[in-house]
Image (cartoon, rainbow, N blue to C red):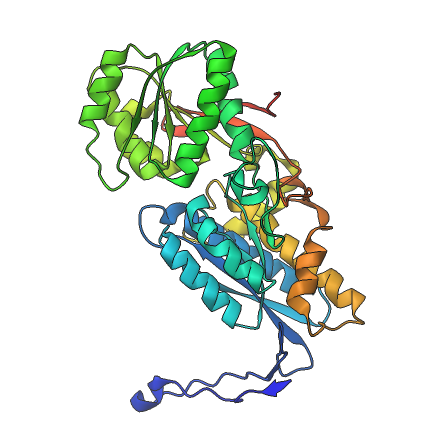
Length: 409
């Protein structure tokens, strides 16, 4: 162990205030002594905490915070106190990579929850894997992250340190297509995406299944996610004769897109994935968003008996922001890290080993518990074994569950 300074003197000293922080000593690879014979372990959080997607990102951060508070209150891992360190990636891959490097440099960090965006995850995976630092995303859905770039033909896991509690677009896209074609009885679709990893991948899996079912793609378009003027695309949708629009992307663009499509005269629903499943989509789409649809991972948290305690505790803690689409999955992602740390500590006579990060990553593969979202465990690729999805419809200014189930390929 290396001794660290016991007292950090802040700049506030100049103003007559002094902040004292007891630091103790730090292990070479994970955790630090908290000064009272215990160990402090940090769980990192990477998400967009500012910007257009901050509603989802703050829900992720708060839910991880709740998991950490619960573990500490219950003294779930004897001798270990958990804390979180949240970094803002602004939904940008470059920021995500910088954050990954910061987490790796902090030896107290034994696991990271996040990110939200699949494109950001691509920039972080190798950084974490090289450091044997486990990463559990509550939201990434692009199949390539766990099964390789050629996942449709041959599944090969790229990084052993990457896991996720959300199911993938290999299931979400086709599930949406089945609902749109079989349940909503829509046969002609105009497909739009934002050209990003998540959006383009989701649109592709939707399109393949929709055509397989007998549906017709009457038009395709890519949009610039940096703009909010989609009038040209809306006109194309109106002219195409489509009876539904599928959008691969996120709510900051989906809301205005839906509104402008209706304004152009195409009174047809917009359908998207979990990236548009947010209260902010409804705000942006306005009243014209009524009837729009979104798929999201898992069953509605409010309807799950396993989630009642989470919902109640979240409310009790008084978080200013809603837990949003990924709250339950974020809590379960954090708890999976906590479970892995618990196993490593118990297997090492109540202490963290020198190679704690590698051991936690190894333990994650065998983690299995009943979580907020149901049974939490991982397959050989690090993917969630829970494949359930739900279709939501905008009704009376709110998302209402329309159908839950699993994709039957």
